[in-house]
Length: 283
Ligand code: AMP
Ligand code: MN
Ligand code: MN
Ligand code: MN
View 1 (cartoon, rainbow, N blue to C red):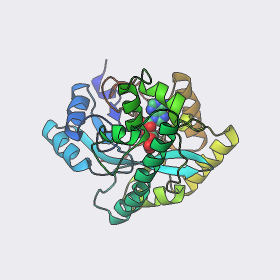
View 2 (cartoon, protein in one colour; view 1 turned 90 degrees about the vertical axis):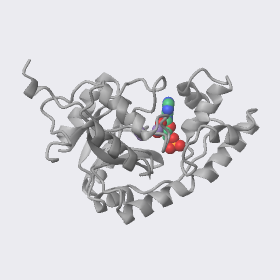
View 3 (spheres, rainbow, N blue to C red; view 1 turned 45 degrees about the vertical axis):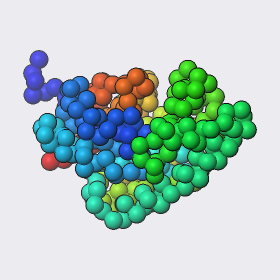
View 4 (cartoon, helix red, strand yellow; view 1 turned 135 degrees about the horizontal axis):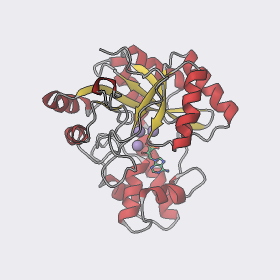
């Protein structure tokens, strides 16, 4: 096999314990390197605090590092995630926007705990906090880990199904950033906006396409095609979508930690060869 033509093992979506991953940023980078990842983006939810440590570790290992973020957005009553890649972590507009996006998380978490207590599960706020490394970023994932620890559910996926999804007893609706804000902050920071895991949104086809159209009109440039949340048939569906909307394509595991994530860092199949990878013109 011609090594020069082997596709780059790029993993452009991952989390550390600065949001809802379980590994320290440096440990995440070491694991990516061990798994054969050649280009890694750390994309913590609404948070840039792990980027400096991750970049330093990547430099020590000679691994190409892409500073990233995953911004929580509300669109049409659904929560949508927008990944920013190649952002300047020192951009004030981005940092301030993210700080405002994070601000409501604690109150939301207390309300979630109140609802879980009413459903017969007391102490969830304190329990979730024991899993939180960054006090500004308490997420549903931390509640899920607490409920697994308590033996209420067998795994994190089951907690989401039974307690933390819309309509379930621990779910609290929340207003995140707008699509325009998220893309605006990413662009202000010199980054590329990528629509994360489009196959995960509970939007009908028409609404999904309207959202992608709006994403593109606002300056969004790429879409995740091969990602940890997609089934193999969705790789094809969103490859067609990338072609139809003339968007670049991204690949990312969305790794959150060993033993929890279905997909290991760098382990996904390559992008369909006719798509333009989001990293094509990066130097
Ligand atoms: P939050 O930002 O607090 O609403 O939490 C969102 C996070 O929950 C996502 O980034 C995922 O890590 C996790 N999550 C959402 N849905 C599921 C699910 N069905 N199974 C496992 N984890 C999920
Ligand atoms: Mn997450
Ligand atoms: Mn996401
Ligand atoms: Mn993610």
